[in-house]
Amino acid sequence: MNTLPRWDLSTIYPDLASAELAADFGALEATLEEIERHHAESLERISNGALPEKLARALDRAVELFNRAYLLSTTLEVYVDSFVATDSYDREAAKKQSELEITQVRLKQGWTRFQGWIHDVAEALPPALEHAGAAQDHAFILKEAAAQGAFLMTGKEEMLAAELALSGAQAWSKLQRTVTSQITVEIELDGAARKLPMPALINLRSHPEEPVRRRAYEAEMREWEKVQEPLAACMNGVKGAAVTLQKRRGRSDCLHAPIDQARIDRATLRALLEAMRDSLPQFRRYFKAKAARLGKSSLAWWDIFAPAGRSGSMFTWPEARDFILENFGGFSPDLRAYAQRAFDGRWIDAQPRGGKRGGAFCSPVPRVKESRILCNFDGTLDQVSTVAHELGHGFHNDCAWRAGRTELQQVTPMTLAETASIMCENIVNNAVLARARNPQEELAVLENTLTGEGQVIVDIYSRFLFEKEVMERRERSELSADDFCEIMDQAQDAAYGDGLDARFRHRYMWTWKPHYYFADLNFYNFPYAFGLLFGTGLYAVYRKRGREFVSDYKELLAGTGEAGAADLAARFGIDIRSRAFWEGSIEIIRGRIDRYCAL
Image 1 (tube, rainbow, N blue to C red):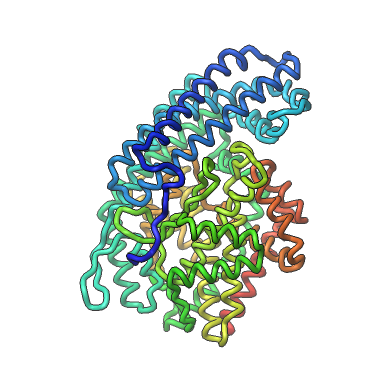
Image 2: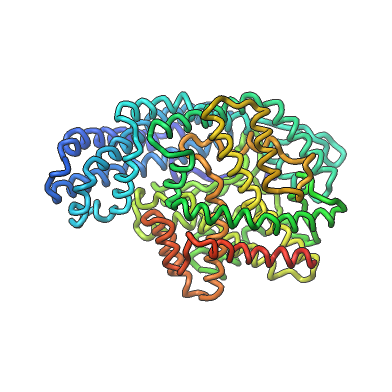
């Protein structure tokens, strides 16, 4: 583990105390002052009766300023968070993050003020956008801003809400990350007592020996029980703020804003969820087949990620890198070249360690047109797939930059943000499956693939049910840690059914999944299922069309911030409002389940 790479941040800024970082802080503040001045001296003097050309020029300037501000803000945020995410004990980074967050409040307030204004002049927008310029180039974003401006409180209320978020929902979110990242757990491994950070303990869920997996599960449950009360307070704080704000903003229910953020409609979400629900018996068939291999009638939680078959597929970091590069190259030389840059440039932090955030993510760094990827690599095929997944996100960013898209043009909804990552997972997983030399190797690969797909369909379905119930109940009162555990237990029962042993579920799943604690983002669950099934459908199109598909695919990635999900999918003949599309993707997964059960 000590030889695994840590990311290099020096191409962004020399260090946290550097003059370059301070200069960009100053540039961001100066840009925010320009945004505020432009709003007061220009935008507020324009009404629905304004001449189209005058409105167009004012919009051009606003677009230019917001693009500059978001480029600086995103770069600074990713750089600072890269220190905090890998070492929550770093006080200098935490202080710098706090300073940046205060500055970013002004940016949020500026954009909110702009949304309210552009909603008020929406009638004059169509003729103004006929004039060539930055506004016309950003027509989709501006029209969306005008539409979302209908769901705002008064200007003073929105300004106050943005400021209070720092000591409210965002503070609760930060506390959850700090608490969960600093837990270390004692466990017996190979006959000796070991102390592991929580991400490393969670990685033991895929250990080949059941006694180890069970001890890790039991140790994990004990640790979450110790911190359940502060984490319940965090959940109440985040969801309480969300419920209050959505009501004051005139949202119809807790799903209204997430659906708009995902750039889909209710018909699409309904079709997706119904297809997911109807697929659950197929996944339970897989769970029971896996349980039978382990000599059980149903799986305990610690068995869900247990390996099967004999693949011998434990990867060193160089082996994982070479395998990914080889198979990315078979799809597209551009994809391989991008991944090579990421590996060679040390854009990836792979080493699990104390104070480091669990899970994985990819963040864009627009100032230098690079990305940074965090993972907790343990040599399993699952982690190789995770690295490929995050590289897919980075390639998505790269396609947009190479196409000359601005920061506003790159604001991609959660649903489409998973497109490239799922495609890269498919590339790697199918390559591993293709090289299987016997049934035991094939079984091992199918196990890894179905484990991941089961998480994205079955577990995500349970997370959706959990969050919906929490949001609805939080509107009436605070919930206790026991309440959260009970809701999670019920949600897992509805999703996993008799495929999972009712005595050994994961009632504390709500404590450590960061998606529940995002201050401005609720229901970050169904977009993963959307991404998996949309990406699976796209991969099927690729298999039919071959290399000619790749150029259209790269154009899709470059344009995910400039159209709704339905319009982008229609370019490939896909109707996301139809259950038939989602069921077609699930049918591909069902074929893998059939093969797994046959083996």
